[in-house]
Image (cartoon, rainbow, N blue to C red; front, side):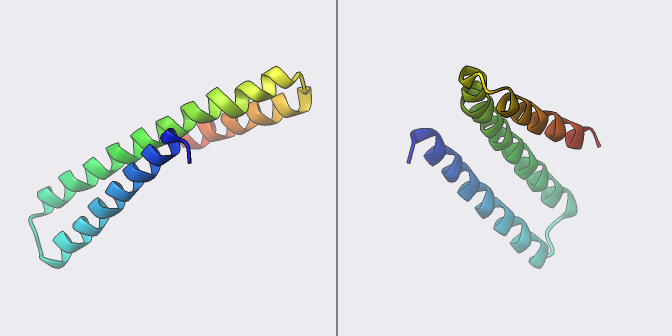
Length: 90
């Protein structure tokens, strides 16, 4: 497994632990603001992972489609990116 993939998996495992921690905080009836701070930390961590995966996609999948000269593949890859950005705007 590539180092980038290992890094992403490790980050996701840390996020998984954070989410379990939030569930435990709720079970323990912890202060709401503390729970919300932890939720913000999870959202931030997920955003960083999402950004890394998007960079990887652009750097590998989209770049390969461009280099291939295959117009249909290029359109498909760019279409995927546009669809993703449109979902983010909602």
